[in-house]
Image 1: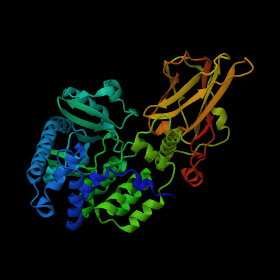
Image 2: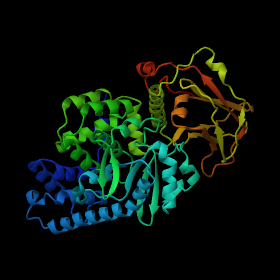
Image 3: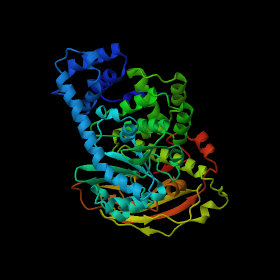
Image 4: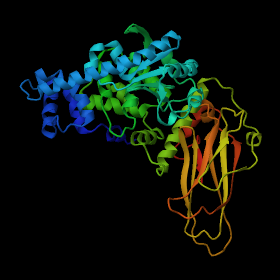
Length: 498
């Protein structure tokens, strides 16, 4: 297996140099600081680099005690501390309201680190507070935030949708109050949005008093897992301060490495965890057992490599290989979640005859059609979406674009050119997409959205008729069989026939 993916998406080199200066042994740190000053100064530093300079500032007495930048760096450190304190103070009223309502929540990422070590607030800038809400308290927590006059940000401004326990599109909702922000998480990890994915995390939480409020934080091992995964999520301007949290956790000596390997395997996040630990060990000198790294690297495989690339780069819909990878990875996790829930096996005999819906007419223009997913799906079935359409015979040189989405996931997006034909007869096409029913069940997804699009400035769509059908197909009865036989992209978990 080619492991270049573990190195290809690391933070920019200038940020890595600052991480080395902040975290590595004195000799390596001094060399990294010298290299950074040759490339940058405070005036030309990017915003992510400014955030890291606060952590470097406390080591300047050993790195470069005569540096003319010392006053500026001390000013940056004071700025980071002040901004972090303001952010935390503005979030306290909502956290207090959650406590008074006896709603369960967990502080995540930077807030969790500062709750344990308040002195780190001068090293780690916090612009928002991340909070994981217990699944059973989700609706009440959203109501509490709205009562406290916090507003839902951007495209999530529908309180009815936000309150829903089946809110599958996002793993978190942003609440704002003036210039304060709290990210209220439905799930700890974006890629793990199945029912029950966070049960183990909740059972291992650590309780403490923070600023007069009783709060929970993840155990150090879960906290490290979250930091490594969020560190490789897409951002327009990547920021590597997650490495400050990860290094502090590892050096605390409180990581249960067997638990980390078990949770990484169960959640299928080996690629992101291996990539983060590779950076910390090879570039920064954080001590991690070679056996742990070797175990993680042996488990790096498709479709999770493609999913990792898609999540890091915010893949475009045109990258069909990454779309398939994200979908296949989600299907495998959903199968595992349903397996953990002790679902009863489904008999294969006659599965294909259990469900076959009548044709559902779809719009022939840019309007989208919401199609409800059939009810009473068995956990180990595969739901087949059959999409038929007929094109006008005179539509020479035109193009149709089909897009099928589930909440929070692109299932298919592809263009179909209409080439010149000698016979003026309608062009009939059928598209079939098979998805594990477990993916819909584990995420509480009850509908998909289908759209027919055309390129910008193109002539009207040449679609004459279009219908959709559901059909339930046979599926392997055990998740282990799926893992043993799957070879991406022709995986038995998800197949596409076009």
